[in-house]
Length: 130
Image (cartoon, rainbow, N blue to C red; front, side, top):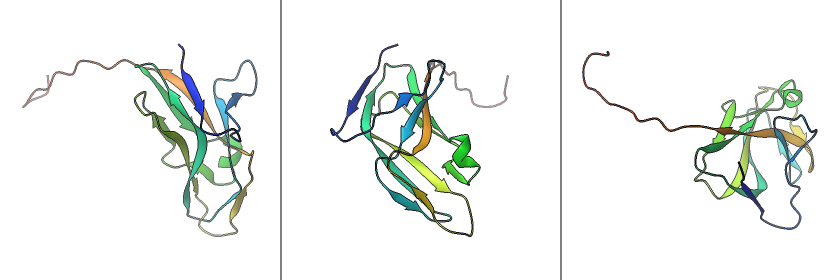
């Protein structure tokens, strides 16, 4: 599978695989931000993707941040193959109280992996199941 990643400016830190055996690419913050308790913030990643039909990108939380209450909102974020605009990571500070969480430019804030899928033919019936 081949996909195209476009960096939207020359200051973007692109995602990359940490090791040869990594299943997911690390996504890094492109700017310094404070994430307040209970707040969700969309972190712009500075790149866009073109994926073949039948492939999607899945953005997931990093376990290290999760232990601090910082997670991808809704658990995961799915990027469809026909979405070609800038990728964003919806980070949520699930802590109810306490100080804000500082995210520094260059911090690994999420991970992204790719999944092939098949769109099935769906037969719709009215009435009883079976």
